[in-house]
Length: 374
Image 1 (cartoon, helix red, strand yellow):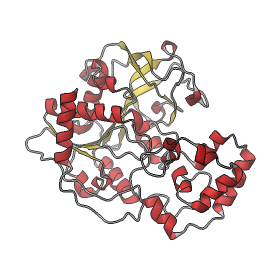
Image 2 (tube, one colour; image 1 turned 30 degrees about the vertical axis):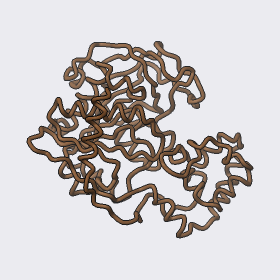
Image 3 (cartoon, rainbow, N blue to C red; image 1 turned 45 degrees about the horizontal axis):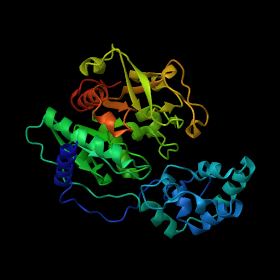
Image 4 (tube, one colour; image 1 turned 90 degrees about the vertical axis):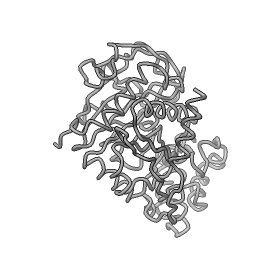
């Protein structure tokens, strides 16, 4: 693993050399939006006037939140919580939240607020790794504004590097969201999101990403890339991923569970997956099945094989007999693969999970006929 990490770091440094550094971002999402209880908590914390409204009804509570929840510099949980969601930690009633919302909406959005909201975004464009005679060209995106679990991100990074070497893929690792522009995206076959958390793309970058997929690009993502409690871009969880995160157990957080494979799925066959296997990880539940948006499930969980309890279980974590954890979908000619496996670093060397991830990325990057236009 140490050797893989060293190789990954070297590749990442090469791929990110000589970037085109752009100026300040001015088209970040919600830049001009009024303050409200639905605002990202980070934007409330960045505004003394907005924070004073919360403090009025919950004196000192924001200041006593753990730094990882109330930080104003990414990565921070404050980027994946709304002000309303955060008030749940204070025990405020619904009528008090309504008063907070009304007072927040009455605040002016100043030029300083707009600048502060855009500072966690960027327009910097990385230099792509040489393509050579590579069979596929990947852009691995690693910009994280929300929750970052460095061990899992690093393990995934190393696994992707080794994967690219085995498959003869050219891979560029970058934290620069400026990569999401028409010219750069036209030079890659697939984009891979390595445990991305938090809103990370500007409005123009979102548009370029959507166009990339509409014209037949590929997308693959793992675990935390679909694990935010609050989203500020509905298209991403509802259309691209196809399911919203509900939570994960915390009693205990990491458990062994039985994974059931849909053996008729082409990727199950490509990965050589057995009918089932058991492994330990942090198991996500979703508010609905991705089947509802047309996704084809590769693997599901047997809910009877692990315990779904704990503070992250608000609203319930039971999905019943249909509990998908890996699936594919088509967005026009665009190919989407997601696997919820991947919090524990060990999962990126677990044979079945690794085979699934590799097959999913290979499909997203190379099977240009896998998603005929609808």
